[in-house]
Length: 100
Picture 1 (cartoon, one colour):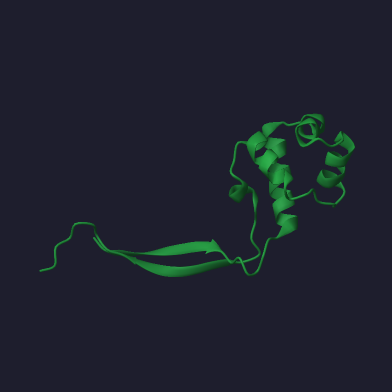
Picture 2 (spheres, one colour; picture 1 turned 120 degrees about the vertical axis):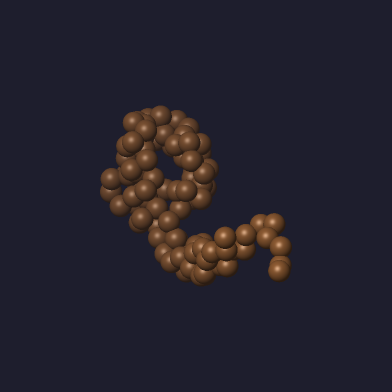
């Protein structure tokens, strides 16, 4: 049976929502029960620096997302929150259907 699916992808021209990305990272850290010291040791920074970006509004260096993604068990893409998402309809044709 043919159908129409909605395709979504980040609008790369709009960029990232850094505040929403930070919130998502912090929620995952809390869910995993990671301590600031553990994160700091893996990132090569102080626990105070981790605490600062988690609680006081400053944000960490984006390169650290690779390490954080490993600690959190998710891909970097899953951590990033785009400002906007592009959506469009895609026609999906049944595989192997013969034209009659």
